Image (cartoon, rainbow, N blue to C red; front, side, top):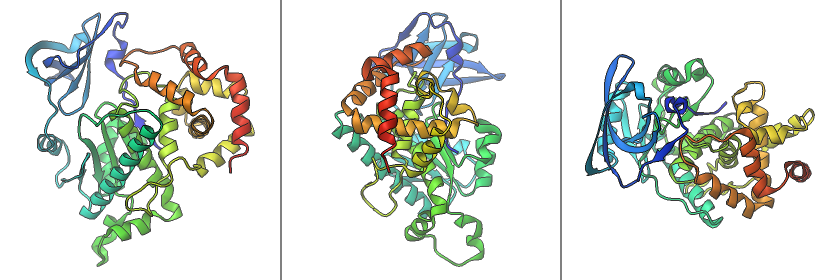
Length: 385
């Protein structure tokens, strides 16, 4: 199971009939808010102001703060420009919130905060950097220009599942025990654990944890799905930080998840490239063929109109499979239209929610009537092997 953590946004329940989006070059905002009985001070850039005074702020560490008017204590602005925390400042802040024993490994785009082995942290950083390069190059070749992330991309890596679950439980609840990693839209961070299990038995065996050993362990068939899950979440993080989607915007769930499953085929054999992008995601294809046996006639319409199937445990596996299949079909056979649709979605502003009918209309305006597309889609996927 994989999960992008879409924390319910308090500002989303505010009066949103009139929203204003702040100028990116506006001054630094200083907010004091009261939440859960405590006063919290946050400095950042104002993204959205609702008619009733509610705010959406991005802090200097990249965290999104949705502040209803009843939580707002004080709001001042100065002329100082907004600047993200430096890498050292960000690590110092993160370290205070993590359990004792964490260290950091830095790469060109990532801060890998970890209490597992240094080798696993380096392996993770290398994996993410190769994905980052492949992801950005892929969309550039498709004619969609991404931008560099404004904030360092943070990944928190625990040594084992138990310590990860104890930490992640505050966000995921009981689901933490069944999810090997997740990306949070609110904090902008990935959280996961060492998938090799080496830390659990290294104390009993005198062996060195090397990149080659990690690759051997995680290249086994039994480990491929869990590695794919981490790649899936890392893809979400890149997409939401480089301009493919905007955090807290109404990007359709099938679209964001479809892209993540499209990229979740890891290439552990290459130290530099990522040769498997665009390849058939065989587990998702097999699952979609199973789903076809009882697939409802309105399946494509419900997939596009809302994201409910992704949060229903009885339907989520099939929803992910159909999202992959639809994304694969559109990129392979309707590439120009797909990029046109992508550009439209990338311009959506935070906290503006479309109705199910509006999502269908937006989709059909680019790709044509759903019923006809569904027929073409199923005919194409039936031939994919």
